[in-house]
Image (cartoon, rainbow, N blue to C red; front, side, top):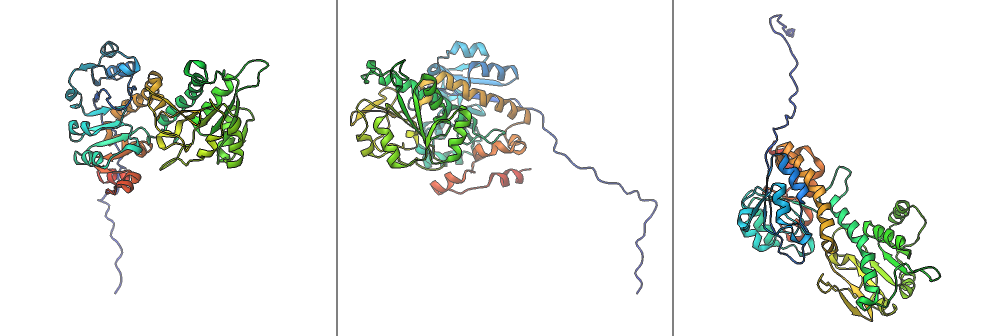
Length: 404
């Protein structure tokens, strides 16, 4: 049988179809609430009055609980002049669509959350509880964490700023505790002409280590840095712009250096769980009396075996006559600087969220924000949390693609 040719009629016109592009939705108005933090020595606030006035100028609303900025020396007057409404009842603040907090959500606060809210806050993995997560999932909450939020370059901007503050503060803290005023051994960090410089040992060459090294060098101390990553040691030397005494973490060398130092800083970071203990109790017992240990990694368990968590109110304790400073939230002691740093990251993010038409749209358009989202409309999208608490994990990319 002969196959007939396809029939092309001149009365048809063949046209290519237009490509359908994602049309950007109109910007939305944000309704932001800032509660006063009641948790353990949290003095920071996530938006400064300057940031609030920018939000208000862009047509958004901000309600904050009275005295929320007190810890960072911001008054209610500063905020009301910026255009925020001051609420005297916590419940009013929790009526907002978006909550911006500087401490993790607590159990009491879970009760106040309204369904479908969007929360931006830290999560503090070490103290996270399964029932808090479960309650937030039940209320279909969308939540973004400070710790995992990434910027366009793939860095974690808030963690980085907090690490810079903690690193810079380390030497100021050590200096205070070496002086007689705080029953230290009466040594001036850095020393003066004719006197050998103070010896500082830094364990960990991340951001905290780098900023601690910068401050120590600026004070005139001699600095020795330990880290098992040659890449990090090289990066630190390049960033500081000079050759430093560096070494991998080798117990014998470390013990020898600790014996003669005046300040030892624990600045190791860990990706998932606890920081490894690299300084044993016997190493600490051989250190000189009156030496100061500042363990910045205490919020992940600490890298000195003798470290125990202390508070801003009673920051130090002595063991083997060595002064230990182990406050987990160092940036909170410099709350105003820390608040400004957090605010600098969140204010542009909130403005962008509004421009994109809300959180649902910004996660679609901006891939790097996805790493920070651990709950999306009640689904747990952080693999580490789902493993740890044995809760169902949902891939965020699939979730948002299925909503399109």
